[in-house]
Figure 1 (cartoon, rainbow, N blue to C red):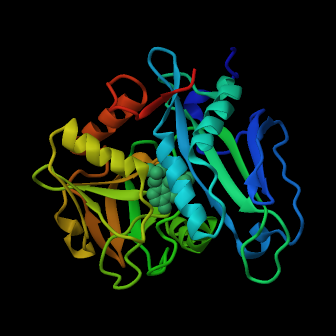
Figure 2: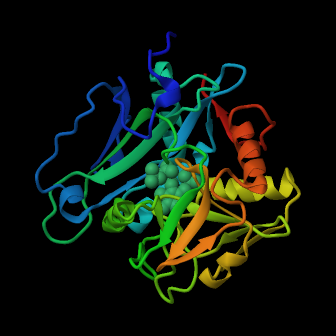
Length: 341
Ligand code: PLP
Ligand code: COI
């Protein structure tokens, strides 16, 4: 297989159309067999559920080239089960979890020429998504759905790669109490667009959202969970039922405990105590671990002791261990790596 001639090391986090994608349709109460297709465009009725009432969910995971030249992806079974949870919350039929993983494998195989080479700093981002497709005008779930997966080669989510970010505490909420913050619904991201545009205009890379009920506790950003490092070198990560259960965060908790022997606390984190941490990072599939150097709360600056030049030492250890596992340099826990080619 001949790789595409792309400038792998300088890719941003953008969409590059590739040749193959997976499609399966749900009609009369059942998913069809699905197929790999070449057409990147979708034609739908003007009244489709996705257009009228935003009945759409998605996932995000990555494929990597390992040091010894294999193509692998990371814990796709967890994306499959999280997507099934998202589907149930929006009254959509879940795409069967084993078929989800199989479809990921098929799409990556078909697009192997787009999987960035080992060491390039780029990866293949995989985007499964599902939407209501038949006309609905009364507010109710659709009867018919389309599940698709496309892939696109990507570089770092934040410009500047591993440089610490400056973020702001947002006055907007991302999720409602008892709402949909814990699932990956398109509507959560639509909610965040106004806030992220404002933050970018003001020169911030992201928003720190607070808990929607009391606005005193740290939730997450628009596209990543938080990790904090204590001055004693422990890992603290916010626990809340209105944040997305990040697969990266759950993996880091394991890595911190079992590979690095760190103390780990998953608990409520108050904004007031953030000034006492030594390091802060954003974690997610797209973000990997992006260090945060400064958090601005209505003009008051919280400067992390790790500074604005580079990732703090504990964050770097977590980053190296997690990416080492993903890229096949370190032995992975059982079941974490799915070899594709
Ligand atoms: N939080 C939000 C709101 C996200 O969109 C994402 C990205 O998927 C994450 C957290 C990180 O989740 P994961 O590590 O599973 O990619
Ligand atoms: C991911 O990390 O996969 C996400 O979906 C986050 C998104 C903001 C790109």
